[in-house]
Amino acid sequence: MSDDALVFIVDDDEAVRQSTAWLIESIGLQVRSFISADEFLENYNNESGCIVMDVRMPGMSGLEAQEEMKKRTINLPLIFITGHGDVPMAVRALKRGAFDFIEKPFNDQLLLDAVQRGLKQNSEARESLIQNESIDRRIASLTPREHEVMLRVTEGKPNKVIAHELNVSIKTVEVHRARMMEKMEASSVAELVKVTIQANNR
Image (tube, rainbow, N blue to C red):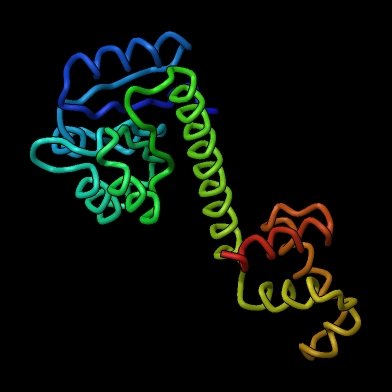
């Protein structure tokens, strides 16, 4: 989990904001609080973390904020805090991709567990994104011929067969293969296959 991950608290009730912040800070996490969804959206700057948000607020509601976050590709896990009468609304939010919802008055440990799960999910998602971007850069660095060689190597074809299919010498295939493996940062065919599977399964 990233040390700079933040827990964003969005609630119009000052007492709830403060008590929730104290609770989350008590386990060593960083908190940033906002009085409204508008204020959060105006100040969010692509930090990692998760959000604890009241589902019913003056102005932009939690559901409206969720839709606006989607439009802005803010992909933080969103934990809704809800009163008993707002449970159907929270269920709709879950179906639209919210991470969790917790009913007031909530058990402190229940909220802390949800926050830590949310932070873990966000950390893993960001790590996966970084890995995917790295793989894309490596593939983009290949020449067309190196790409052709890579496709055949990952199919398990030996250099002799690749040379025949591409109508080049085995020595040429060996040169392209060595450069391709270096650019793909793969020390073995198995590692190369894993990387290409990851690239193709997105």
